[in-house]
Length: 237
Image 1 (cartoon, rainbow, N blue to C red):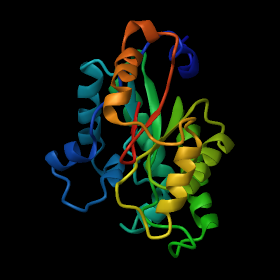
Image 2 (tube, rainbow, N blue to C red):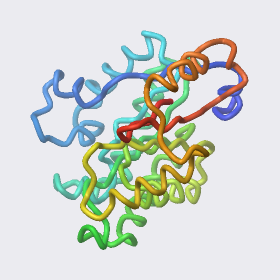
Image 3 (cartoon, rainbow, N blue to C red):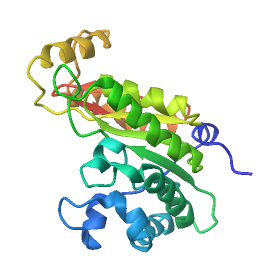
Image 4 (tube, rainbow, N blue to C red):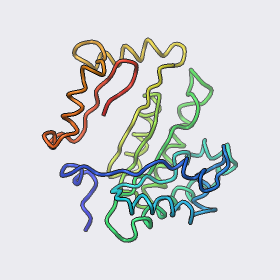
């Protein structure tokens, strides 16, 4: 029986896969096309990409569902295919391991806009979209959910809650900071980040370089995860 994801990460590092979007374009996806729909229309090409990652030594493969929420798929005319797109993605990623042990991470990306009051999408609509996608990924057998490249904490919180509500065995959340933030958000974001750091400011790259090297070494084998805020809005992990 395969060791659960939350247990295995306590014993050794896991190797992830690589890019999907660029690989889909190299395989023929048109610029701006719906790569997630390829789970249904070109599953062999998606499988070929992920199989190469598995053969290269990836322990974890992320499903081809970065834009697999109803809000995102609706922009390509595939709003009615949410369950099928996401469940097919899990099956393809699982097949890529060829029967060998491996972990499939169901991918939930941003919904591609701004929620009220900064944008015109109601949080309740985003919540419904994330819950629908997370449920499909978990029902298909994903070993965990990874919520990628979020730039708004409110959106990340909704996605994490959706994954937990769906019964995900493990939930991974990631934030991507940009030097440019929406008007009105910069001061709030800066205040929040600094409140998390005892020194009241973010560190500089040269100040945390030794810590990063230590976290990457065998001496930090007991530490399973750590984030360090760096000046400029980046996060070192």
